[in-house]
Length: 223
Image (cartoon, rainbow, N blue to C red):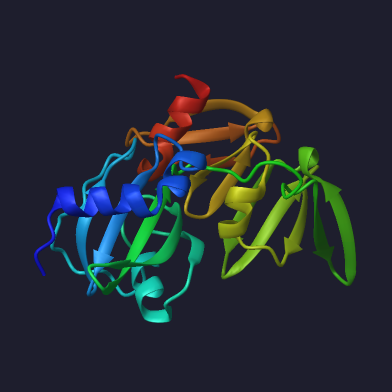
């Protein structure tokens, strides 16, 4: 297949001009794969690079698009890059061959509008209790279950951290593979003896900040 970067970029701009201009943010990244091989990559704000000619990982959005031949969107963990990312993949045709156009949105991307959660319903013992979002201090993934905390009370929810990451208000930030915090409840941020960052919440809870998320948190809190 004789396709180079210029050919692919021209094809995408011509065939998917509406997609690229109408809703893709300027800091999004675009990857294109054909025959389970990446043939084009344009980086947005992400601190990563993707090698042209590298194989498509089996647990990536691009692989799912090529395998299922349909649009796929999901929050992925670390299957392709160092930080979780929200991606949308579309099946496309390039030079008569099935391909995948994948749009990788910023790590802090959130859905806007009425789809944002206004409350979470948590379970305590045999009771289900709706809790307003603004009263939740942090959310935790533990032993394949999701828990959230409000007024020192623990609640179990069926909603996963992956879904919550994109459907919580802007005051919620993911700081670790296992934690999302409400910045309203932050008391301070410090370093431990090994220079790793620790967030201290107003209720006394201390949570680690992983290296994968510290830059995004710095960008939000300006420290």
